[in-house]
Length: 389
Image (cartoon, rainbow, N blue to C red; front, top):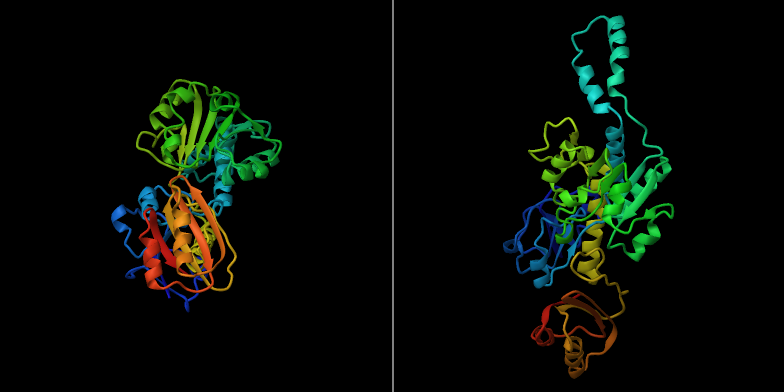
């Protein structure tokens, strides 16, 4: 029986992927095998000795101490793309709000609640509507910074709406490149994209390399009158630089899912309370993906969508399986196999992958090793942990 500790409210559709006959799932549970969470902030002190994996029902993992998890041999899973459609639709609303006087017009109409004469109201609105005139997004250029799961479908959506799309992603993977519509024009650098775009939308993770990527220097290249949208992460944008650009004729408006004190109340800023993934469908999708990834890891040792461990998959064969994490240094795998050979344990199949400083092995053996054999492998210098499945 596997124990899964949920640290936030998780969609029932996700929890249903963990069958009751094999899993005990609860918000209060002792010695859990795995943690399943959304926005709960973890510290290194929360990483108890029983924890084998952590799954985040969402894309960002800045609430999880990933380096500490890696040190302990704990894979951290996320769910890239599960909330992509929800974010895409909110970006669309942001594009429309940034091009038309929609919010301003709604606010104005609310001030007319005391008018009881319908004819007079119509006459007044006909006179005042010119104050809320905007422009259409068709024919405008959208710059997409970050062309992963969300950025690629935002680009596709914009093309469908008749926009020109330019993109920039210094870490574009082959898989993401295949997903990207061929009509998207690739920009060599961020400055070039900013100088050509009427609208800029950000779709990057919050990592050291992207911290304050949109700063004063970057915004010095922005096309005058552009609208910046941030539905990615707060840390990507230097809000002080945004305010400076708004006040000095660079950016026309800023639309974001991350309110900050110096932005609230500005007429040229539209802020939302971090609702990018706040749909029933997105929460279901994230929970299902997170639960399925945890299940496959706990039962088979397979890893997909981990932010700190290599992607690895091997079909189950007869016999038992060893899942072994070790430091990514020479000779460790050879030493592991030597222990098995010395104990006359036949290896049926195996796979080894590495990522940065960590390596991970799946080894199928004809018979289950004894506790003493597992201890010998665990005592090899560089082995972080070992699990018999």
